[in-house]
Length: 281
Image (cartoon, rainbow, N blue to C red; front, side, top):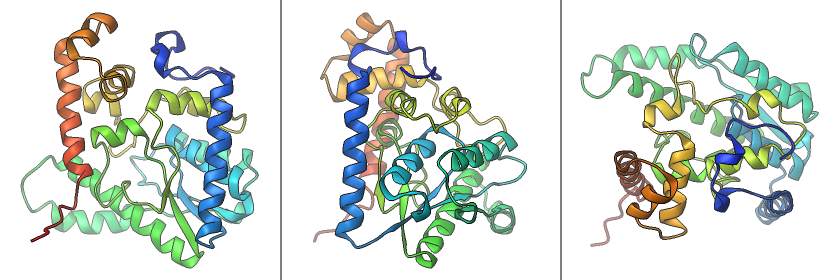
């Protein structure tokens, strides 16, 4: 590893650890595929939402490496009062490190449109109000990204990783929507490892706990109820290694209740991942 990351590298299971040469190959292949995709569809420009978090940082860096800084637009879309100043600063720091032109870093507050919609929608009782408003924020951001993509003749780049995808930890109509996904075959623990390869990604981002900042103090791991080290271990061993729950509990010292919680969340991911349901008759 080039830099320290949020996870203790020694605790990451061997099958999830990436060697330096593996990381180099992953980066090389992803940059090549991005270039091929843009060339195939005759696009030269990309737009991506940058939050100051690990997923968007890695996705943005890969896109810049593939297309060049002049051809990429970063959009910061804070909800002031929830989005931290630190995250906004880190997104700007990443842009500077990647030599993005100043005009290519766009900042648009989502407070007003979200508040106006929420003032009406919160009158309808039901569901978790905090999550409902958070989803509204995610959908507002995607609306902005796609309008910017039209204005700039660009493709919207997503930043969903494999762990989030399998768990269904995303907003339908929000961060799930994009034109191209760069890291959705990497588990969260692997995203951090690959990101550590790039000197342009600030160490503060590499050491930062995952959070979409949809409300104050929002933590992905707390909301889900398990650490990403546990999540990735369970998901990867079942999805990729085909190991039983019993063996996972014994080999990796993860409680059965925690394994069941993660797998229950995985079922939600399967349902969300198969939407919309097509009526064929």
